[in-house]
Length: 217
Image (cartoon, rainbow, N blue to C red; front, top):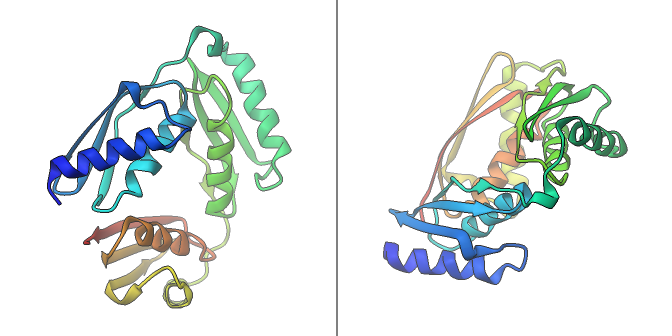
């Protein structure tokens, strides 16, 4: 597929998704690597645009350079925005009480600690859905006691094999002390890439995942 064809397909996907206003989004591509530039009206819309581009056949990576520009009615004071973020975090049973948030000019920074990556992701998702948030910086630390590196590596490999959505034949996993995991190799789609990352993060004791996978259609 040529770069121009890929650009057209991504544009069509952005137009097709009713959650996205693509009128101010520019798309460029080269060697399967797509770049999104322009403006959107919310952080949620920025995320949805990246997801839409990533699911297009032929895309191997997405560089999301979209900027969030809030309408006047959506602009919030930092104190008010922080209050709403904290309230939303508190009401979500997946987010531990040890997570805190601060806000500076609409930019939300999440701090504190959690035991699992899914808890960090949930907190980031919740904060990003609050009206007035321009971006979310996740500085939550993972603090669960880590099993030994061999146990983590073996668990991830078994998870890869169990996953019907993932052909793990071209992947290798290595681990270091402190729950540091590296995934290398090739997958056949962006969806498989995401499945591998999610499986690695689900292993007990993982604190960091280094993504060295390539997508080859």
